Length: 112
Length: 143
Image (tube, rainbow over all chains, first blue to last red; front, top):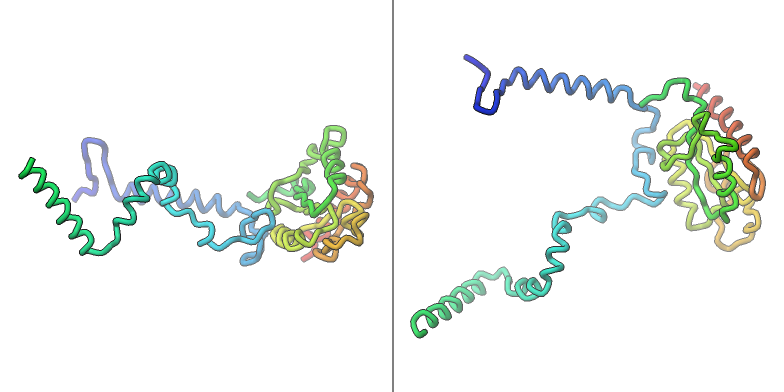
C-alpha cells in the first residue's frame, strides 16, 4: 500500500512529514540548549518586567476579541443603542415582534 | 544565548532612577559619550533588568519607588552587582530629611559598590564599574 497521497497541487506522505517534524524538533532543541540557564526558576526573574510595577492579573490585562471591533461599534453606537435594548433574550418578546411585523406586512400587502 | 568567556568583562548595566535630580544621569550619559566610550569594552546600558549584570541605582529612593526598586532588583539574574551612584543614594544627600524618602538605597536593597559625588565625575563612575567587575568575578568564582 502506498503511503503517498498525490493530488494536482502536490503530494503528502506521513513518513516525509514525520522526518520534517523530527528535523525541526532537533533544531529547536539545539537552539534551546544554547540558552542562558543562569536564572532562578520560580523567582521574580521569570516574571515580566513592567518598569518595576507588579504584574497585573491576567484577567485585568486580557484583551477580548470584542476590543477589535471597538471602532465599528463606536461608529454605529446610535444604531446599537436602539437595537440592543430590543434584544431582551425573552422568546415571547421575539414572538411579539414576529406578530407585529407579520401584521404590518399583511396590512401593506392586502390594503395598499 | 550563552556568551563566551570573552564577554565576561562586557558588563551590561541597567540604570534605575529612584528619584534623582538628574545630575547623576547627566554624568552617566557623559560617561557613555565618545570621550570615555565604555562600549568599546562591550559595556552598555540595557533596557531590561533581565539583560543586566549590574543594576546602577541613582537617587535617594522615594517611598513610591521603594517597592519598584526591590522588584527590579529581584529581576536581575544572578550573579548581580548593585552600584549606587551619587550622594543621594548613599545618605539621602540634600533630601536626607524629606518626608517622602524610604532610602537611602542600602535600606531597600543590598549595595555592592558606592560611587560618591554630587554628581560623581565620569572617571569616578568608571572606577566604580571596575570595582563592580572585580566583585562580579569574585561572585562567579564562588562555588
